[in-house]
Length: 194
View (cartoon, rainbow, N blue to C red):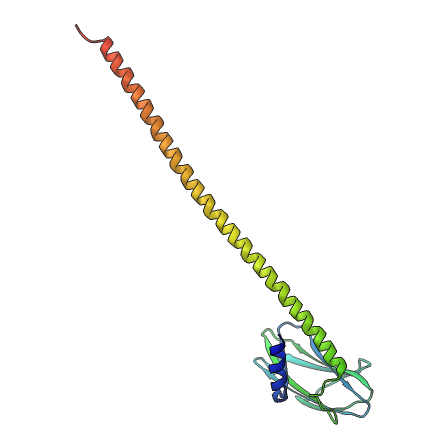
């Protein structure tokens, strides 16, 4: 897991934009912090879908919505706090939206200590979730193997049982034929013409 983080940190400077996959009609949002009078630039591009089906919403820290006229918008932050950009797909098909936001004067590749702590906690939770999924997969595999083994044993027992029943049926029929034959012979001896 840590190897992936090291590799990701090497290539992070080459990342130019973020992407969100819009599958259903629920909005998906991204948050950013800005200060009063910061210039916020937002650019987005709809890939793999109809751009008219995608709505974009931008909210300030007091939940006031700003309208977008085009796929590139520049706004001045009127308040300090957490700004939110949301995308919503009103169409029927799955859509990918790539976007980038920049706050003038802030290096967006910089991560604060709190962000790193939160990221580490999130990665630990993901690692724990993956271990849980692995454990469930192993348990499911062993359960399937046990069921397959039991079915094979049951089939073998049914086959042996069927063979024994057929052999027993043949023995009983043979015994009955023998008894009938003996009976007929004894009857023939009693009625022998003189």
